Image (cartoon, rainbow, N blue to C red; front, side, top):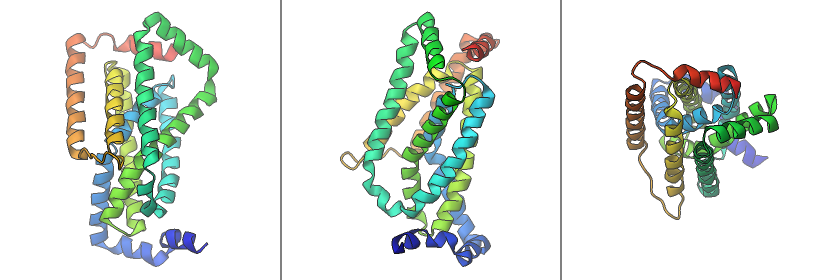
Length: 261
């Protein structure tokens, strides 16, 4: 009990909250943490947007992100308390990297089967996981992905400020911003079909990036540089789309097919 009190006591200290809220300097730190969270969440947003595509309607996709965000807030509260021990949890990064590689492999494996076989795979998958079962499976995947990506952002935030309340406020705002980015990417994927395979290429690269950070390898690709790379990939994908569909042809059939899958 004493350990739990030591780890989570600051969250329930009203004086600590009041001091942070009234301090302009602390809000500057919170703003910097939000920026860190948004930079580190580029990977997360791309993966989440791609994962929600399993669901047939935009409403379900947005709803899965809504439920996922509340799970993220709860987990962030828990993980900040044990943040000093997270450096020992590199195994989670390995599991997460392997899982992301599997997602990328599964997508392109199905894509290479051809349109007819692809539809058959989707139909069988829908038969096995229908309605709310499929929905909650996606929510569970969102939570797992949040766990994997939260390690880096929490450790980076704790390096900036040792006050868990400041880290929590910055994390909460950052998660909300990241979810907004994910929703934008998700909607763009529905309008521009080329974005989906591009996203899974990025997911594979994200998996490699994540795996390189384990202690045995210890290669860290700066988030700013990776963010610039992602923006560049998006721009190239947009150019390819508008070259292939100069008048926007082809977008509507994609949307109709998704609703019937």
